[in-house]
Length: 59
Image 1: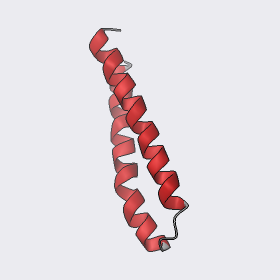
Image 2: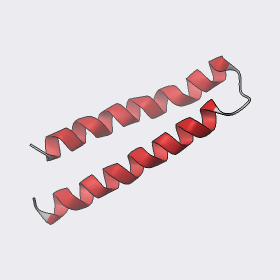
Image 3: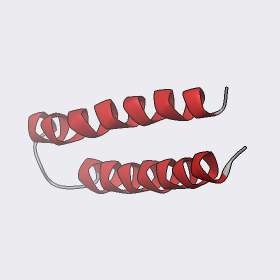
């Protein structure tokens, strides 16, 4: 695996961890369920995009 792929995978990993942290923070907040859903939805979309990118890099 070349340096670019390794660096990108490391960046993806860090970003996924940030998404997980933000999602946990939101889920434990006192926001209404609707507000939580609205805040978490774009995070989950980005999560899915990053997973697809990581899978492509690992091929």
